[in-house]
Length: 56
Image 1 (spheres, helix red, strand yellow):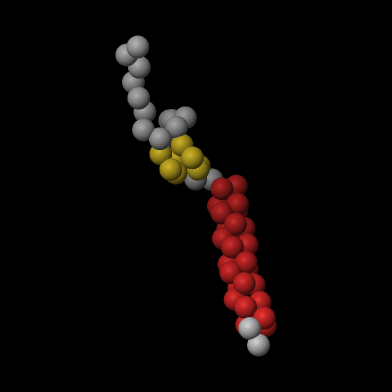
Image 2 (cartoon, rainbow, N blue to C red; image 1 turned 135 degrees about the vertical axis):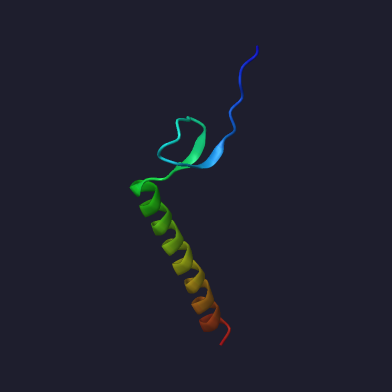
């Protein structure tokens, strides 16, 4: 069992020839991450605003 181990990368560059990655650098990934970050920012703002209303 002398199998070469390949390191898993977090972000795969387009020119890399590997199957071991979590995210790929392409348009879908960028749009998905942007939507996710925007949702999390709105969620944090909502928690802060609701805290202001409920503590008064």
